[in-house]
Amino acid sequence: MNENYKYATHIISWLEKLGVPDIPLAKYAFLQLTESWVEHKNLNLEQLRDDLWSWVAVTMGTT
Image 1: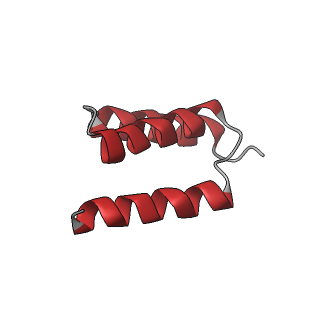
Image 2 (image 1 turned 90 degrees about the horizontal axis):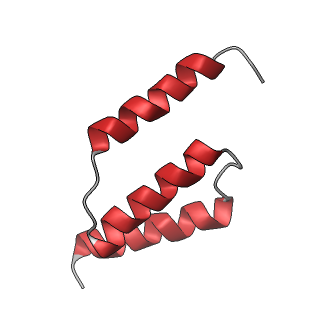
């Protein structure tokens, strides 16, 4: 097992213990990242980044 895989599984485990926020985009992003890191599925990180920042822009200042 290479070091990158060990690190990815450690971070995924840590995030699962903390809990992913109950926000559809957060859950989707976590799933996409997990599949990319562990299952080596293709992921457009730029698009995911843009989606997350768009969500931040829309919800900024609201709670």
